[in-house]
Image (cartoon, rainbow, N blue to C red):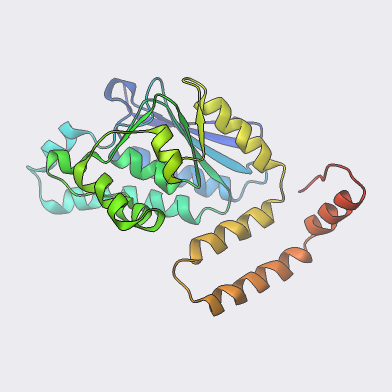
Length: 259
């Protein structure tokens, strides 16, 4: 079975499915390119207001294919560097994507799969899902932005415990740490993620895009710069038609209809 990244629509949500079930949905370069292309198309489509990334079958993603990595050791280092650049391009595209991206996790979420989930804006995980930063267990260091995501989201010692020891962690523990936003019953991560996206899709897309951009910038700019950016986004959104609709709907006690 060929590894691929499948895409289909669920209302206003685009669902990207990592499809390599024989290898627990291990990632590969073709998937990275397909992920970037899919998000680039979705960004300009008014029919897409959110994205869910999930895995086919019982698992989200086992990370890199170890057989492929073993073969890469027989090639020049530039070959693997190019592959990692493809993954990192996808990670950066997810982070910069102006619409919400939700990971729906079942089963194994390991290595680069864990990194991919962390790159998403929200993570919905089944109660029996297992997360592991497995790199150190095979003599490797992280990729996919794992260190960037974890060091910003967690206290230093907590993040390093996950990164250095490569221990298996359940969804409930990650929810306690603030990395998982919702724990679902087994088999229900995707339906629950789609329901969450339905709620997001009902909100003003321009406002959500501003919130995501402001959140992305908050860790790297001064308070003064962030306040200026908040001002500019607020004024721009106030004069957008969606603010007129939203304020009127609130006053009239009806459901807003955003475009």
